[in-house]
Image 1 (cartoon, rainbow, N blue to C red):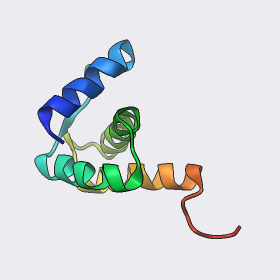
Image 2: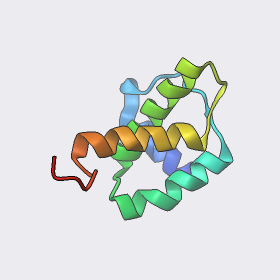
Image 3: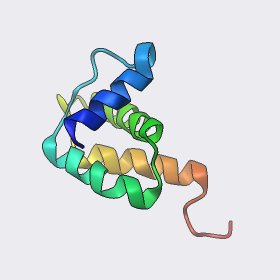
Image 4: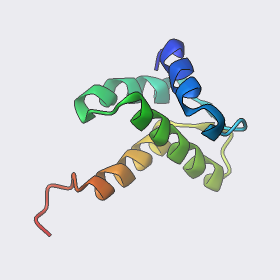
Length: 88
């Protein structure tokens, strides 16, 4: 994501934003920027995705958020929203 977009996300999250969030790798930022529009993610949705991805990264003990963490966070969103495409 462009640094300006991340700045807007951080400002909108305000006090809810964790100050100790790990760094997001440039590759993960590009990936999230590429998929956010096709998935219909708002800035709030991007912020939520980044928080979940940061939690996944922290649970793995990594110092930064990678593409795999963002993908996994998006999978959680997909499951909750019913994007799975199944009729179950």
